[in-house]
Image 1 (cartoon, rainbow, N blue to C red):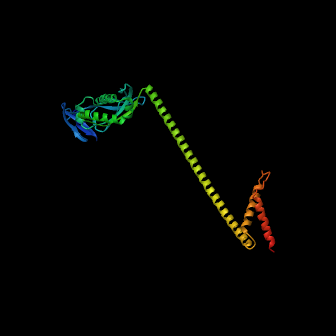
Image 2: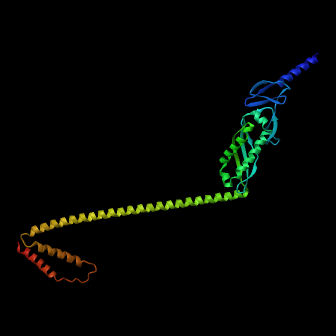
Image 3: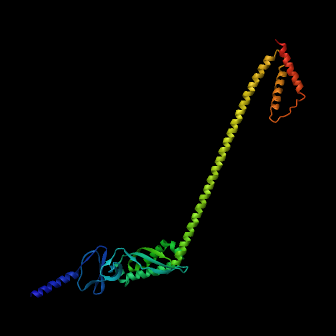
Length: 324
């Protein structure tokens, strides 16, 4: 009797364990009734009929760690379908470009299951199907581009690949949110050629910058010399103007002094003789003195007109002698 009761309790516990399912947030569970689709369980507690209603498992990638600590992904069946966004790191693959250059590319795919029923019943192995679809379309896209275009067109490739994958996986209940090309690695020979080209371009830019610096320096030097010459010429001009003004002022002062002297002489000689003859004689004597004072003058010839001047001088002397 006790054994029978224990058996009943165990069966009840098994039925409860099999009949109660708790679905977590952002998960879904597909329930089949004797092999046919019955319903999709949403987050929360649910009761099912044990042995008649059963969860349908689905293949998904699960990450595991090896003994050496490295992480790798394996395919395993799970009764729970994860509705969160999933990232899939595809293994590196070789792709041939339009100009027949083999490059190595690895990509990241961000996708999300939006319809658990389609994801379970429309495709047998969803992770593998997405991987193969991504690799095939990536080859097609890169095959339409040359190497240079591929290296500078990551965003374009990402957008086109995401659009193609999103459209193709819609019937599987999958939404492809984003595709990212991680690395595009050309062959070693191409890398060396690219490095040489880059170095040559850097050298060219350095030469151009140096030439531009020399040019600017020469321009600045020429402008400085030009300004210095202008300033010098302006200074010399001002100096000449000031010198000329000084000479003019000196001549004016000298003329005024000479005028005053002549006026006084005329006033003094007004009653004693002819002042004009006196002035002429004095000027002539000053001129003759200037001529004979030359350092290289060895012989001085008295001009014929000098006798007239001397007679004028003698006349002046006689004119002063007559007056007390």
